[in-house]
Length: 67
Image (cartoon, rainbow, N blue to C red; front, side, top):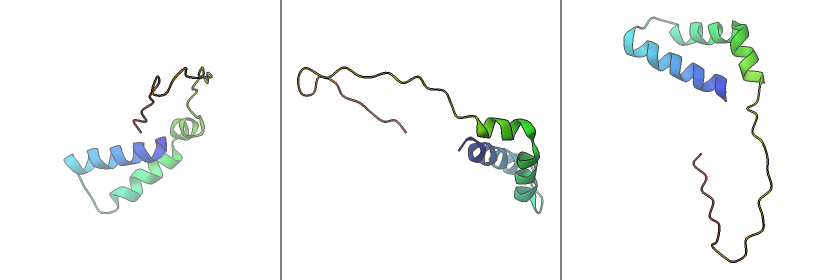
C-alpha cells in the first residue's frame, strides 16, 4: 500500500510542475528499482496489540474507524 501512495504522490507532484511522454512508466521503474523503496514496502508497520476490557453496559465504549 505504501508503494502505491508513493507512486501516486510522485506522479501528482511531477504532473503539477513537469510532464513528458512515458513519465508514469519511468516513475514506476524508478520506484521499483529503488532499494530503499523496496525495503519499506516489505516492512509492515508495527502496531502493538492490546486486549480491550469487556464493557459494563451498552454504549459505554464506541469505536470509530477513520480509514
